[in-house]
Amino acid sequence: MRLIILGGPGAGKGTQTALLCSHLGIPGICTGDILRQAIASQNPLGIQAQSYVEKGELVPDSMMIEFMRQRLQQPDIKGGWLLDGYPRTAFQAEELDFLLEDLGQHLDWAIWLEVPESVLISRSLERSRPDDQPEIVQRRLELFQERTIPILEYYEHRQRLLTVNGNQTPEQVQHDILCKNLAASAE
Ligand code: AMP
Image (cartoon, rainbow, N blue to C red):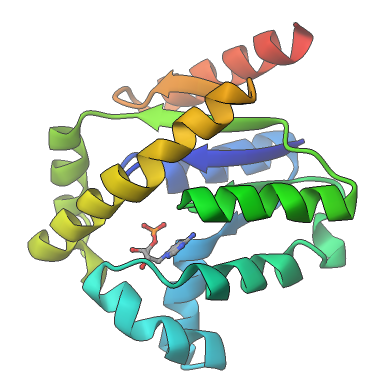
């Protein structure tokens, strides 16, 4: 199974990724966590990404696309994967399709965790990550609206979008994802 999980900051992507990965036995690739770890260890990726992540800006497409090109060719993800936080822009989405075509793989579903903006804000502010400070959360939300929301249409058009109400308990959200996933896959 190859899945993408889409949602704003605080939508519950990380929680659902962990639950889905253990349920489906597939590895998760979470670009936000990878970048934060890279910054903490000051490796070359982290050094390049740091100023963007700290300000809540998006890391340049070219950097992310190259990173994913390498990551999706590693042997550990041959049997499937779940991408959390990627793609984030229409350009990344298109490039992911080209990459999958090159690799002879296909995407099963893009799961959209729909959560009202007020809930995204309050959930993000409850966390204590450095990029969850109020003005940075605001910028991440702006970028989410401008750059990531248009991707929904991209996947909708390809009949790959599963929309789930993310404003429920993690268990309910997980249940809805699995039900919709199974129902849609059986069609
Ligand atoms: P997240 O935890 O997914 O919200 O990601 C944290 C930060 O990492 C974002 O605010 C961006 O600065 C950066 N980031 C993560 N994924 C991407 C991506 N696909 N494209 C560009 N920047 C990203």
